Image (cartoon, rainbow, N blue to C red; front, side):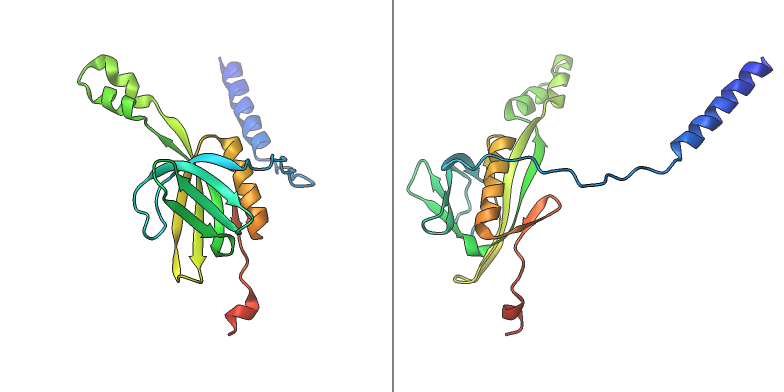
Length: 183
C-alpha cells in the first residue's frame, strides 16, 4: 500500500513540475486570413445610434465609394442613414449570444418540459462603428446587425481599407492627424 501511495505522490509531483515549464513563443505572428471583398449591398438591420434615427430598421448596407460614405437604406420607406467615410473613427465586429423570441416565450410556460428552451441561444453578429462628423458636429456609436461572420468580416475589412483605418487587436481605428490637434 505504501508503494502505491508513494508512486501516486511522485506522479503528482512530476506532473506539477512538467506543467510549470516556460511556454514557447511563436517566431512570427499568425498570418491574417484573406477575406473576400465586400458585396455591393448587404442585408442588414440598423440598431440605432445615429442622431435622428431612433427606431430599428431592416434594409441594405452599402459601401458607397462614389460619395465616400456608408449608406443604409430602409426597405420599407425611403429613409437613408449615411455616415461619411471621413467621420468613421473606429469599427469592430461584435458577436453576442441572444435567446430567440420563441425560446423566451417557450421558457416562460410553467411546465418542466420547457426547461431546455432556456438554454437555446443564437449568435448575433454586429458591425459597430464609432463616428465623429465634423460637418454636423455629431458623434456617436451605431451598430448594424449582419447575417453571418463571413459577410461581417468582409464588410469590416473593406470599410477599414476605404476609411484608412489601421488594425489594433480586434478593432480598426483611424489615427488622428497631429497637425489638426495643434490648431
